[in-house]
Length: 70
Image (spheres, rainbow, N blue to C red):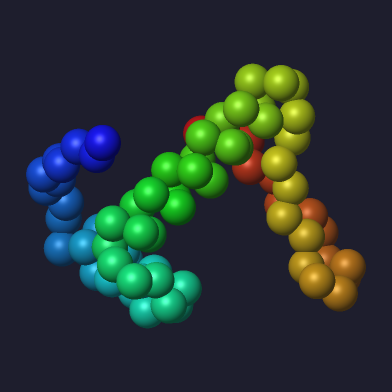
């Protein structure tokens, strides 16, 4: 069973979501939002476990960036 929600967002947020649909070749805005929620929940769970979330470049050059708070 699924639930339907209505969501008001700014024009900038809507444009960002539309860009994510294009960039990820998703089938819909709903798919982008569902995937975003999965990633957000994963990050939250990792931080609850005391883990740090880092981003590093593919070639290993440059400093790592840390996600501090959600």
